[in-house]
Length: 98
Image (cartoon, rainbow, N blue to C red; front, side, top):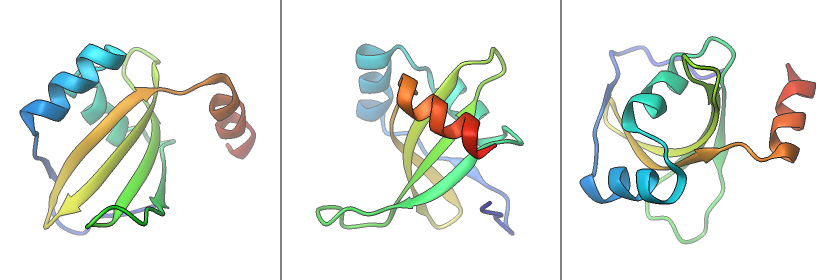
């Protein structure tokens, strides 16, 4: 589990926010809720292309929707890059791990 020692806030890029809604019908509020799920999982995400370190978060929303969120940290800000629903395989792996 990742624990941040400083307060965390979210930094939103309008393009990514709109893309998440258009492609996956995920709102920025749902993305933020997933970060506060006590059962969330956060893992580093290996990417040779990315200029900054990316992370993967799997977590639930207040309505029980399970999300796959890719994000980066900029100082104490969380910047969501993309978010979508978990697929069946990912959901099964998450449930087996918890």
